Amino acid sequence: MLSKKAQYAIKALEYLAIRYTEGPVLISEIAEKKQIPLKFLETILLELRKADILESKKGKGGGYLLKESPDQTTVANVLRVIDGPISMLPCVSLYFYKPCETCDLDQCRIKDMFAEARDAVLDVLEKKTLQDLLP
Image (cartoon, helix red, strand yellow):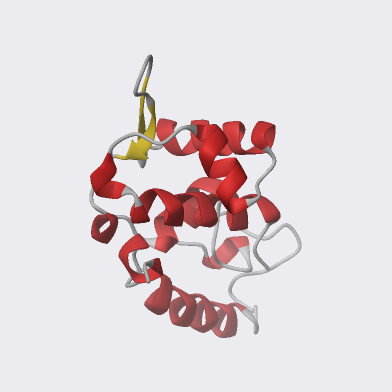
């Protein structure tokens, strides 16, 4: 299940994708239009800026904007930045691998199933970009 933080991140990025050619957008505008609590949105956008998905401009005419065109940012990348691993088990994660604490990998019967589930989800999310969210 997506966290509320990830849902808000995608909503905010959708709005910035729609406004991509118009330049920086004020955080207060994004919060109002997408009904996201302002303080929570500030934290989310800062994380996305640190991950090089967004850039920010200060001063008059400032705000947030996508660093690349909407067709260059995958939904999978956004979710990894905000929520971390996409896989349901740490032992099958591609970018956040960690052995399960109580599992013997050689005898585990569920890891293959969850690796297949991870691959199916990634097959969709790696192909979908912010462009796919546009009307």
